[in-house]
Length: 322
Image (cartoon, helix red, strand yellow):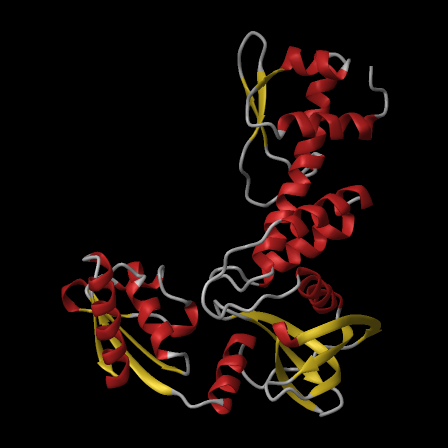
């Protein structure tokens, strides 16, 4: 019999997080207590925010259901390792749809992982090689988690940085947000030495260190970190105006395009139009548009239309075995 109430509640919660319905009598036997105690413990879990549903019947049953908020989860060793490995693999490469929330989750999980499990995660990570395409830049998950923790804790951050021209420098910053463009991670931060806002490509960052020195967050010049990054990228590189019409509804196209291209504009007849100022490789963008799976027409720039044509010819030759 488990006489320690907190320990018994954790054991009960672990059982209920298995996706099945537990008869009250079986829970009582597992915990070594009476059914009345099980009912009281279920009430305690409900008070803590766990949505435990009870069913009527001769024996009665309990199961954990979806609620309005996300309650804490109990994970066994294998589950914790699996989640950490998955998050580390995703965080190491800029994947569309994987944003700062994923990195924060990884930072929280690795903070509480026992050392033995941390070693298992590192061993699995070292033994696997992800297949990435194009110029997707690799980023050490530890770099992302250190920065995510510094952002959450409002701690000043130091790191080594190599610029695009190969110049090395040491930076001391007040980190603001991490932003994923779909292929790369960027840090938006206030650079203390330059007394101005800057963006940093994460694959060029090394030796990140949260100093422990706290700071009060400054107001970003633009409405969001993503918008600031977009404007910064436009200032640094030649951009062009993209106009494309898709033969598909706006909401369907939006689900298959990176967010930085903006929201598609609905058109009559179930079509939509995408307008954006971009600086991406045209060959890459041509392939990215084709991957939506919808028919589309490039109105501008003419160079992109030519890239799409060449891509179509290449794919046709591949399909015909020539």
